Amino acid sequence: MSSNRFQSSFLFAVLLLSTLGCGSKSEVPVIATGSEFQEVLVKVEKLSRPVFEKADSGIVLEEADNKNLRESIRLFKGLVAFNPDIPTLFLGLGKAHQLLGENKSALENFAMAARGLGNISDLATKQTLAEVQYLSAISFERQKQYPEAKMVAEKATELVPESSNYWTVLASTEMQLKEIAACKKHLEKALKLDPANKRARYLLRMIEIAKEG
Image 1 (cartoon, one colour):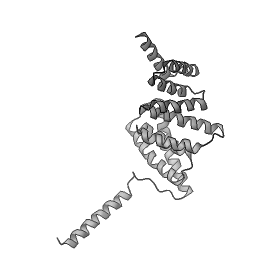
Image 2 (cartoon, one colour):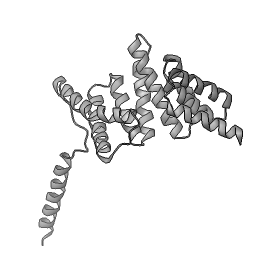
Image 3 (cartoon, rainbow, N blue to C red):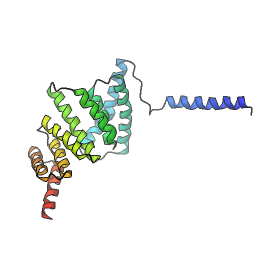
Image 4 (cartoon, rainbow, N blue to C red):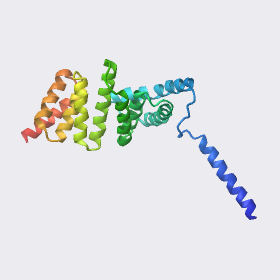
């Protein structure tokens, strides 16, 4: 084979591979119009919402759920590329990463969501920001960054003090930091708000067992 024929064959192979790659579902979708944005938004909500609700209910996610989360991440990235001024998109993107165990990426997106929410101007914004801080606390704790986890958990409880889950995650970080008195106090508060909070009851039992031992 001549060198020219070899080069032509090689270039054709490269071109073919690059063309196949352009159609890969792993690539972030390019959104050019408002109508395309709405179409992708509807699609990502249908994919992500059932998985988020399943996880929030304490149900173990299956491989099909993880697949939907990865596709959701791809779509969320396209949405924020088109319009980076919607904090809830970063919240959704962060939560998808968190459920896949990708806590560093989750925290990056939660930070973007918190920054975008800015000053609290209404109840909905207040609740959304509290949720961002709560989820950030979970990811910080999973990365063993306990002081950071405690800081954002405290912010969540300040914003929405009626949430049992927010007090529980604060108590969990305090347990890791050996702040047992505060931990017990906040677990009791969590259980007063929601007597069915299994996580809070479990952590309180752990304190009692440690005290007995």
